[in-house]
Image (tube, rainbow, N blue to C red; front, side, top):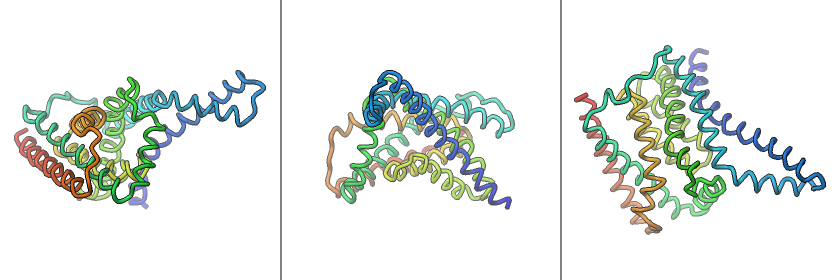
Length: 277
C-alpha cells in the first residue's frame, strides 16, 4: 500500500499540470460561448460553435501563457511545502565559469538529437509527423508571438521543472534508490504531459537529461537554465542553423549520431564541472 501511494504521488504533478491546461481551456470556452450567445442572439448552435472555435484559436497562445503562469504558482507553492518550507537559494551559487559552456554544449547536442529523431520519424512515419505539425499549428506555437516566446522561453521551463524535476523526481527517488529508475519515471511523466506521441518521445529524452542535470548540480536552477536554453534553440536558433532542411534517412541518422556525441561530450564536461564545484 505504501509503495502504491508513492507511485500515486509521482503521478500527482502530471495530473495537476494536465488539469490546469484542461480547466483553463474549458473555463475560457464556457465564457466565450456565453459571450457569443449574447452577441449573436439569433444564431444557431453550429454558427455559435464555429464562431467560438475561430475566436478560441486566435487566443490560444494567450491561454497557454495563462496556464503556464497558474502552473508556476501552483507548483512553486507545492514544492515549497514538500521541500520543508525552504526558500530557494542563490541561483549563482553552485555554478562555475565552466557551467555556461557545458550548458551550451548540452543545449546544442540535445536540441539536434531531438531534431534528428523528428527527421527519422518523418521518413519512417510521415503521417505521425504531419499530425504533430498540424497540432503545433493549431495551438499557435509555430508562430513567434510575444505570448508564445514568453511562455516557451521563461514560464514553461520554470513551471515544468518545478513539477517534474522538483516534485516528481523527489517522490520517484523514494520509490527506488537507483537514480536511473527515478529519473526514468519522471521523464516518462514529462513525456506523457506533452499529450502526443511525437512530442512525448523527444520530451522524454529531454526529461532524462534535465533530471540528470538537476541531480548533478543538486539544483533546480541548473535544469531550468538548460530547459530554457533548449527551448530558445528550438524556437529561434534551430531554424537559423538548419533552414528548411529535408535530409534523407541516412543524413538524418548522421545528424542524430553527431548531435548525440556533442550531447555526450557536454554531459562528460558537466561531470568535471560538478566535481570541481
